[in-house]
Length: 472
Image (cartoon, rainbow, N blue to C red; front, side):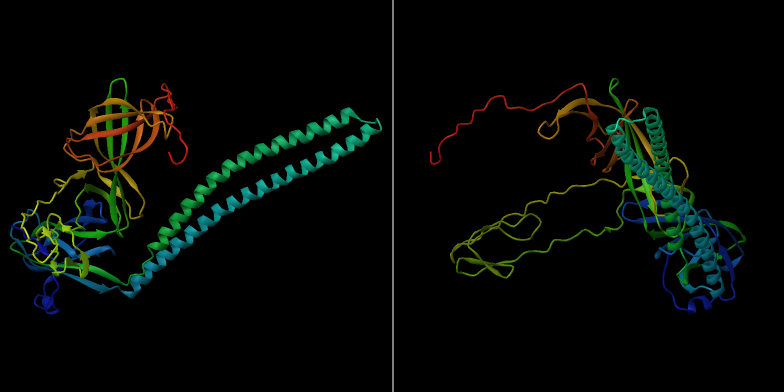
C-alpha cells in the first residue's frame, strides 16, 4: 500500500544515511489542476518512475517559483511493495552557467521582441506621417479656395469673370479634397489596427521581461522510498501555487415564445504561477482554503455597576440605561438604575447563521491549456436548460422602458455564484447583466433587456396637495 507524506524539514544528516542510494529523476508533467477563487491552485504532476530494489532517492524537477513548498504531498497510487520513508524539500542555488544560459536565452527573446515592436511602431509612424501630409493637403486646398474666392470677387467687380476657368479650378479642388478625405478615413482604420498590434506586442514584451530569471534558487523535492521489487511505478506529486484564480461568467440564451432558457456556465481562469498548464484536467472549486477551517470565537463583554446609577462599559462611564447584549455573548440582561437594582438572568439567544452548503467542484469538459500569462481564459463548464416565467418590470422614474425579466427555479445540483451574464434573446444580443448568488432550489432572475412594444411614461394624474400660508 502506498502512503502519503507531507513535507517536513529535516537535518542534513537525513541524506547521509542513504548517501549511497541511487538518485532517480522525477520529471512529471502537470496533469490535474484545481483552481480556487481565492488566488490558490492545487497542482498535480504525474510521472512514471523506474525504481530499483531497495532504498532509492527520487529527485523532482524544479517546482515553479510561486509554489508553496509546505504544501507538497507525494504518493504512489496503485503501487505494491513501495513505501515512502520520508520527504524533504531543498532550496538549491542554481548553477551559474545554467543561470547565465537561461538569462542569455531570455535576452535574445527580449531583443527579438523589441525588434518586432519597433517594426510595428514604424508602420504606425508611417501612417501618422501620411495622415499629416493629407491634412496639410486639405489645409492648402482650403487656402487656395479662400484666395480663389477673393480673386473671383475682383474679376466680378470689373465684369471679367471667366466662368469655365473657375469651374475647372473648383472641380479640381473638390476632387482633390474628396480623395484626401477618403484616404484619411482609410488610414484611420489602418491606424486603429496597427495600434492593436502595438498593444499586443507590448504585452508580449512585458511578459518576457516579467519572466526574466532573476531567482537564483530552485526548489526540489527529494523522496526517500523503499521498493521490495524493481519496476516502473507512477508517482503523484501535488502542491499549492499562488497567483491563480477563477471567477464564474454566464451566457443566457432565451426563447420568449417557448419560454425556455439555456444558461451556459463558464469559468474565467487566469494564472501567473510560473509554469504553463498544457492539456490538463481542470477543475474549478468553490472552496475557500484561504479562510481556514477553525471556527471563530466571540470574546465576552463584561459590565460592572458603579453603584451611582452608571455602568462601566469598555472603560467608560455610561448613563443608567437598559442594556441587552446580543446573541452569542456570555452575559445577562441588566437593568441598572440604583444600588438596589436586581439583576435578572436570562437565557442566551441562539445566533442566526447562514450556511453555504457543501463545496462544489466544476470540471471542464475537455482538457484545458492555461499559460502562465496572467490573462483571462474562458473555459466552458456546464449548460442548464430550464423553463422560465416572463414578466415586465418598469421603473419610469429612472428609465422610461419596460424591462423583460425571466424567473426560473435553479433545479440543478450546483449553486450559481455571482457573476456577469451575456444575454441573447432569439438571435439578438441584448446586453450584459449580472447574476446573484442562487443556491439549488432558489429562484433565479435574469433581465432580458427592454420590450420595444411597450411605451412607459410617468406623469401626475391629480395634484391633491393643499398649499397654505406659512404658520398655518
